[in-house]
Length: 171
Image (cartoon, rainbow, N blue to C red; front, side, top):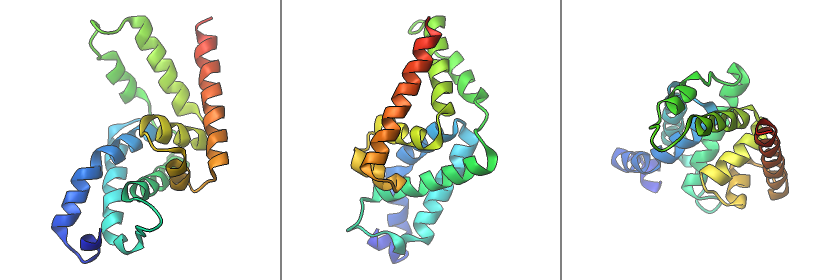
């Protein structure tokens, strides 16, 4: 990052290559479609370049800082546009190989995905960071700028809501 701060484009490209996958996955899980995911991912790395002087290595890891930028961009987007269209995601689920999953399993995946996308922002963010992005509770709390207790509360509520939704649908 020091080289990026000094305007080194090669260092910038290296970091973009190293972190694009994780940022893109996070944005996709928050937004639910590829178009908006690409926009958020590009904007995250643009901000890494233009605000590289704001990164403080003694306060957080680079991946935590980048996810915080992506998180804030996703939240701004969701507040402006509401939850995004889930049709694209369901089309992808429907196209999965039938040899490895049944129609019933696909319906459960759709229900679960819809349930995750329907969670309040704080719960969805906490769940996405901890369960899908594999951040520790401390790292996720740092990204979300909340206490660990608040993060754990959001995780507990999210898990309970998902259990209720999936459990009620199976009855």
